Length: 114
Image 1 (tube, helix red, strand yellow):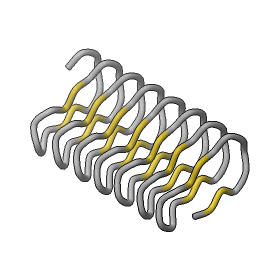
Image 2 (cartoon, one colour):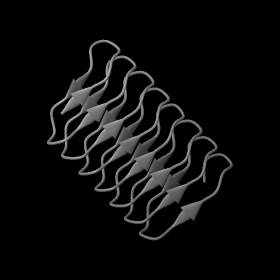
Image 3 (cartoon, rainbow, N blue to C red):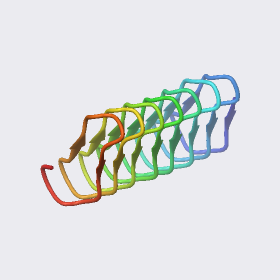
Image 4 (cartoon, helix red, strand yellow):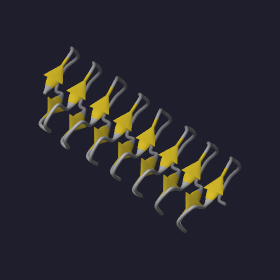
């Protein structure tokens, strides 16, 4: 595991990485957080690019940024925005606010409360 800098960061997974920022938690194997504030990469090979209070919990899930976004599903992605959730496997939320992609293979590209 590797922590490049910042403060109050934890990289506990096998080959987990936290690049910088503050209060990050990379707990699963090959999980990565590059920066931001209070982010978590807890799924196997999960990726968080930055932002704040975002979580990549699914296997191979991705959250490049935003605030309060969560990717629960395997291979799920939330591109940005605020308080969006990609819950089903292979789901995608591009951005916006308060969007929920729940069914497997579903996509929401933006907007609010979809």
